[in-house]
Image (tube, rainbow, N blue to C red):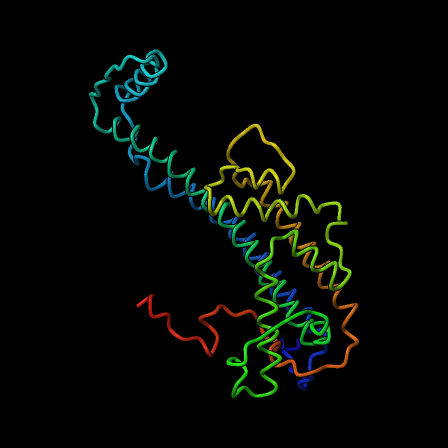
Length: 300
């Protein structure tokens, strides 16, 4: 039987198409990580509150009876007058108290995972889009010639000629990524004839960005801006992220990342390669895994 092996071929300069695919695959890996996290973490949270908080020992018949008496007491005394139930068993009291705490905190923990998954998803998509546009501008810098751009002399003095383009690209990307998702869509239309809003799922897709905003800044409370941007008028006041919504979000962002990549790749992959050192092909790394990572002084 032949032994398993890996063949490492001669290094070949990646094509423009390879570079687009690399950015897309990096984003897809983040999507896969989010999916796995949402498969594992919610179940682990549930197991934690069941195993670590609930009483381990069994209850006597008297303690079980006291449980039932308390439940009856709670259902029969739900008016405005306060009444006190005195426990005979400290163990029963602790179990009821812990079960209420479990309900409160398990719900908050589960919400934390889903809400922050959406926030991370939108942020990673924005990073994917920024990298994709960066590559596109590096391939076709003539696109920027049609734009009215200024850059101060001070930032150019003592700058190597090849670095001037990098400064221009950085400035352009900073301005683009500050745009609202609908303004960003218009930018892609005007610059590349890429029409995201023609997709049937556009309204669903753009809603994720506005929900992300109110989840970060308003704890999910719907405001006038959200209703105006999404053309909705909800009867309820708060939005969150449930399992169905999260799974649909993953699918939407996957679809749009593929759409954008394939469109730009088809349009520009035949271009002559320029200096693309900003876009090296590599495996996905966390910031702290990069060789040029410097220690965060605020974390020490």
